[in-house]
Structure formats: C-alpha cells, structure tokens
Image (cartoon, rainbow, N blue to C red; front, side):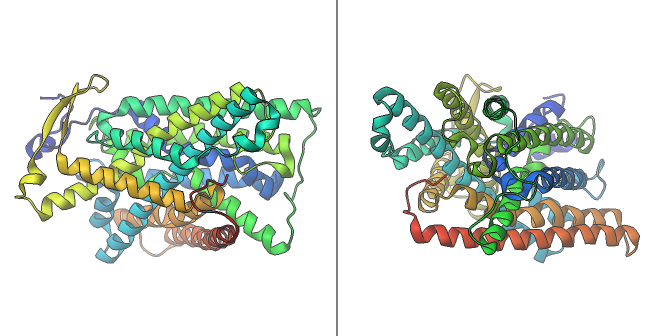
Length: 465
C-alpha cells in the first residue's frame, strides 16, 4: 500500500496521489506556457507600451487570485477536511446549482477540446516553419516559393499520430515525466524567443520601436477588433483553471492539497508572467507595429538553426501540454461510459502493457478506451484543419474560458463555501466577475469577427499564422 494514500482512497480504489508542489508547478507551467506566448509580441503591439504590460500583469493577478479560490474548492464543504472533488465539475456540483453544473460542463470541456485544437494548429505551424527554413537554406533563397508548398496536412497528421499513442496512458499521474520535459521545453523556447527579440532590438541600435498607443490599423473598427483580439490572446495565455482541480487531484494529502496548490499556482503563474512581459515587450521593441502573430515566424529573426531549435522545443512542449488538456476529457467520457454500460464485456476488458518510461513500469490498456481516445484525437485534428487561424482561434478560446472558468465559478464557489452575504466583500467579488464578463463578451465578438473575415479569404486545411 502506498504510504501517501489516504484511507478513503484505499476504500474506494482510487489512484495513489504522490504529487508535490514541484510536480504541480510543472503541470501548471506546461498547461499555461503554450502557444499563447508566441502571440504576446503582437498583442503588446496592438495595445501599446502602457496598456500592453498592464494587461499582462492584470490578467496574471486575476488568474492567481481566482486560482487560490478554486484550490479551496477541491474539497467540500471544508477546504482541508472535506470530501475530494476529482474534477472541476465535481467541485461546482458540490457548491452550486444543477443549472450551473451544466453550464460549467459545457464551458470546461468545450474549452479543453478547443485548446487541443489550438495546440494542434500551433504545433503544425512550427513544423511547417522548420521544413520551410531547412528547404530555403538547402536550396537557396530563390527556392522560397517552392518551399512554401510544404504540406501542413501531413505534418498535422504526424502530430496527431503521436497524440494517439500518448493518449493511451491512463492519466496525468502516469505521465509526470512528460509534463516535466514539456515544462523544460517551454522555458527553452521562451528564452530563445526572448533572446532573439533582444538581439533584433540591439541590432537596430537599441531604439524602442512602436508607439504608446499601439499599432495603427486600416480603420478604427479594425483597430478595435485587433485590441480585443490581443486581450483574448493574453487571456488564453493564462488559461489553466479548467485543469487545476485535476492537477490538484494528483497531490499528496499531506500537507493539505489546497496549500500545496496555492504555492504551485504562485510559482507557476509568477514564472510565466515574468516570461510573458519579457517576451511581449522585447518582441514589440524589436519589431514594433510589424510584430507577427507568431513571434517565431518573424522574417529574418536570428540564425535559422536557432529558430528551428525554438520551434522544435515548442513542438515538444505542445505534445505534453496537449495531454494535460486531453486527459480530463478522456477521464470524464470514460466514467460516463462505464456508468452507462457497467456490464458490457467490451467496456470491462483490459490488458497490461509494460512501458519503461513511466513511474509504475506498466499501464493497463482497455480496447474501448483505445477506440474512444483515438476518435477524440481524430475529431480534434479535423477541426484544426478546417479552422487553421492562429491568433483568432487563441482569442476566441481566451474569451470563452476566461470569465466562466477562471473567474465566475471560482468566485461563486468561494461565496458559497465561505457563506459570504451581501456586503462590501460580496459586492467586490461580484464587481470583479462583472468586469471580466464584459471583457470576455467584447473579446468574443472581436474574435468571431476576425474568424469570419479570415474564412472569406483563406483556404481550409492550410495553416495561417
């Protein structure tokens, strides 16, 4: 018996919980630092030198504060001695009404799946960039047009095949090593992107590019959509609330999980915020209003081999981050199927497979899980092929997830848990929620408008960075 297993875990047959503040921090960094970091230079460029850094810091503060509230909701009714909630929806079910549980389920799982779509698009863009760069340096600049014909579809399928294989691991606790590797990769490409941006800035004489009020646009309405899209990209860059409970469910029961999770959130969000402000401001200083939507696709940025390494690190990171978002979806679907058809032979059959890279040395593979998880990955890939717009997809995901998952439900559960009545504190919490709602609605409108405009001129199944 595992010494870290609580009595209720042994009785219910639940998984052993061996996570620490450092494994939780690794999971958080893996989930938070993803494709969003690549759009920060463009986002700062749209907002300008004052509003850009302030927006990054503001979203970080809100995300950290609501993360501490959500960490307390892992157990109910008491944050230390209460019954565990294994998923975000379980926590909402413990504190709020059935209607809010339904709303949460839609918001959480659509966003989890949407993030998988976004990561598939981002990884493909990086693979295309590597292929194009190698092609140009192998055949010369005159072959640029021919090198642009790299098949994004084939590369996207290759990424998806890797995800089909990794999806067969039962849960996050079996692939901590993947999150650790992915977290290291996230720091690697962030440092490279930061270094290349600083080098580009220095090469221009160290003069700050850009303007206080941000980049100009063809019209005032286009400027507004770009600003809203930038806010959506920043909101998406801090997204991880929908997997916080699942990450917390991997922690040892002593010290109390909520205290460990709050430390992990502080370390994870603090580290990523430093990176975000540095990368966003350095990219804007280097490229000014011409900062690209994906900083690693900037024309003439640094030695091609170093940019290729950064893109490779990004791909490896997204391989792990994809699983952090996919595993909660798999777990929920499989629990529902098992409860719906408990006696089905196909559902209950399973085989043990030895795997040397995981902590336990082996995993249990169930045929129905193999089929189910493969279908989910395939569906994700098809949608990514049909809507391959990098910035617009990130903005829409940020708008869709920020208010309900990062703000509304954590605040509502905190009010219910602490039995906060109408008064100064209640009005402050509701005011914060209302402000964030208005931001999400505005960003959602801007993102949808950009996607509609892009669909008029773009070709599905061809990635657009």
